[in-house]
Length: 339
Image 1 (tube, rainbow, N blue to C red):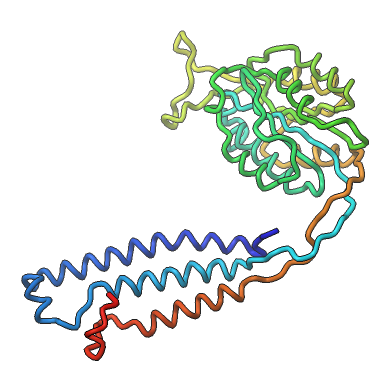
Image 2 (cartoon, rainbow, N blue to C red; image 1 turned 120 degrees about the vertical axis):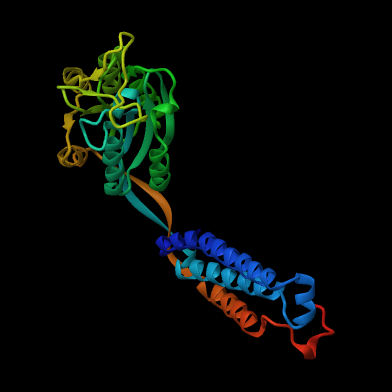
């Protein structure tokens, strides 16, 4: 198995395109200055030792060395020792509402963004548990099958927006049913569904779906996202531009708290109302910590071999080439046509 021990250093690769653009602009500026002196053909005859290709070659060597150096400091490693370990894990499915009403800003920065933050921090607190993601509005779709790959979970989470589902509404029942089908065979591990929604435009019999989940040994928890007093829904086209109904009135979306409480009660779970603090996350973690966890065996790499040495030698060779490659032609090597 390959990995980087310090993957955060890979962000330095963003600098490389910037350096390339700067170097290219300097090259164009230099050529422009030369053209200001006279005819380029005549200048080439007056400067027989000047080379226009060698500086470009040196720039390429320097950027290559810098690229390899970034990968080197990131700490490339290959797994060298496998061990079978026992882990205690539970299974969680997140059902996240991504309808238009979730763009309301009564919870900052918005209901949807706050929901993403809650899920992201929850993933950070997980250890050996497995997690999956279902998104819903008027329809429900599996965004991420149940997995222990937390990195992929965060990647999928960041891509969520109301644009993913055209049919608007809040099909909580369909989302719960889909979550139930997404679990593996029933075992000793605790299983739970976490529904994050504002309950606006509620559709379907979610209470019945929550009861069916309990029959399958699955708890249903609900996080109410929003304010019962309501808030307008930004369109994204301006600071004070909000969604309007057919009569031209600004639409006010309100948290349907009673609906969330009914679903949680039917699912033998907990209802939590989210606000601008982290209280909802803390309460959710306390609830999930009480879940039964089963012991499963898994093969993991417990020792890794460092692989930076080969990259270090490559950087050394590139820098040597850069040092010995002069920007001007060497008269003693005029018969050697390398460039």
